[in-house]
Length: 461
Image (cartoon, rainbow, N blue to C red):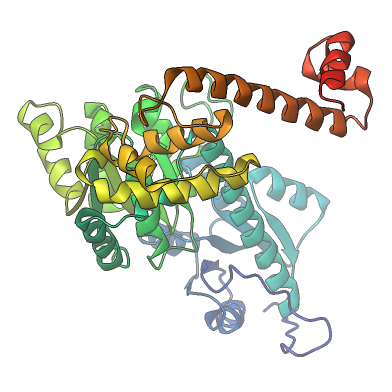
């Protein structure tokens, strides 16, 4: 039996702490009962879930039933080595981190472990803090990679619009807030319906925020924006060589949302074949990466949204009835803004404060007359249009007259003055960033030095 050099928690060389360890699910695979017992005792009180297996056959059965965040894998075991099983795992679409432990190691084994996809390599005997440090590194790195992926994706796909949908005084908005508070903490699948721009994604985020999954990722997916031929790979991932252009294996969005919420916007646009596969994922809670032979368990809460009538799509044969029933366990319907005029004023004030701070300009006055005009406008683009109008008004210095009526001559003069003010502020900002160097500032602005000099002279700057 391999000797174990344990260390109490208060011993010299403090054990590293990972903020993600408490929520982690870890599988220990080792044929030595002493090593399994040692690791189980050490991790049971620190992690959400810990399981053990004496061989890779038992470990494979556990992986088919439970999603694990990390595997601690012994290399030298009876039957098959850990390295051989690790290579099989990577080939079957298992993407989570694996720490390889062994009492018999050399440089060649370490290199093979890293090439096979091991996240870390720990030599026996080891102390508690050594293995805990390795676990902490893996969990922190994995969490950071997933968060970076989600943030980059949101920067590319997130439409304009802040959390203002939750502001409002109408009975409709009060009902939505109550539904979110009631349903959010539950694991139930939710279907959010409403016209474009009513705030379906913000509602989904609110459901995630009040749920026990709030510390895990919220991953939004616009089903209409992904080409039908790649949507399966986007959602479920793929293995290297699974199709032309698959130069490497890749995790799908279900894996990035592990433990959290996956928001499927415009779900009615899913191709028929993908509808069938999504239904199976909901029922089995497993996904199969493209090119993989095995299914992998996932723990994800689904929130779907659509601006079309899914019941009508079912009647026309464009959407699977069984999938519709699985998605529509709870329906939250968002009324168009024209039907909830009482929400316009609080939303306008919220957007004015938020956007004036973002743009660095003074907020415009929202008089009672202006708010009445805003409330009378039909808002075909709903909350998103209201936000855009507030933003455009801040930039130009006045409200558009198709929304707030006014004098046309005064409008033209105000518009011209607003443009001059925006131009001046921008040029002076760029000049300051260039350290007062006018030639460099002109280059950055894309104007001639002569034009910049003339402008600055007119402004007495």
